[in-house]
Image (cartoon, rainbow over all chains, first blue to last red; front, side, top):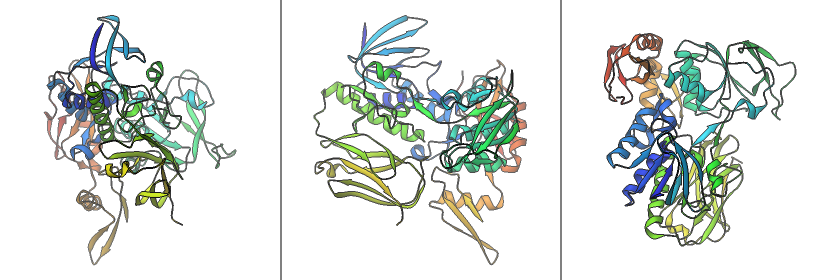
Length: 417
Length: 111
């Protein structure tokens, strides 16, 4: 069995940045395992621009952003296998994978980095009524058809869900000549970034129906139409508000789920809130020497933050290979008022760097204050004009505050009184 | 008039007020935002991203190397869809020059 210092599962933005960071922190015996034909992950099909503004101070397309990291991996001669699917990861850090050159094989690592990304929620997850015709796609599948394979999946489109991929595809399909009749969002607010509402919907006069959902999909062999309806405050359709649209295609952009099947095979503790691993600030999971980063850990809005998080995991894996187990004194982070999750869930008081806590709010709150408290003391307080569920927030806890922490850290967002 | 800035994920609300023939802008948080608003009220511009087919039938991602007028976006798309490019290409290579004031450039290195 071949062994490596660090095995990275997934060669998307998280895996690539983790590999480079691990290498640059002195551990160079790395193997990246990637399921697709080429490195880069989902960025390869995200041909729109807007990536990298935080990191590179310029607006890159997905493939351009990926290429910078792929070049970094190739320049360092980091080993990778593509078209290789990992079947299982054991708690003693043996990785079993399959590809057409080697068949089924097992490799062992001193440390493992989980960077498998996420997948889209499908029609089945929503139980939308109606027939089962062709023409119903997840937005990401449609994106792959148009941008990688060069096919248009339809000409007359209704989109359910206002997640960013749905908004991006509304624009993309419109530019390629399709008519997008409507984007329906069951919530009273969009789950996508504001800039995407402007440049993907408003620019093309595509109507956004808030508090609306699809109640019926029609058609025998191919979609022929949908019925949408307004929903009440409990998100139940209101009788009498139904509107019919003729269309041949329905796209679902209704959320992403971290792809954690492999995390489960190695016994990593998962959080019901993030649907990803429970991690320490260094992105180590409950299984010693197994780290997680990127969308498999928490669904990010921006790839820039994925890269940043992956660099933490890569560095931590390198330190683990060099120094072994981390000496810890742990406090938990807890969701306070209006906060739906916090990450990392556990913080080592002996950590040697500042800790950035990511969180999301569970509703739109204007003119609010972000409060980080511990044992009745306020560690951080900052004002925000607006917090929305669609945009991840951060709170930075300075390293010199860590040793003085006593008990759990609560993150809350309080609205104007 | 109220605009939402698209330069970055902040999505700042920028208000535009007319004062004696001059336009004044409020609510932006950076120079990019101010520039966006100034352009947006005169001639809104967008970078167009799309794909171009290759002789072998694959598609490669391309973009305009600078923003083009919003009103010209469909015309730019028509040009993009009429191009067949030959491989290999490197990121930044010009695929077609001077299309409504911008160059169409490759957004990926493909061998």
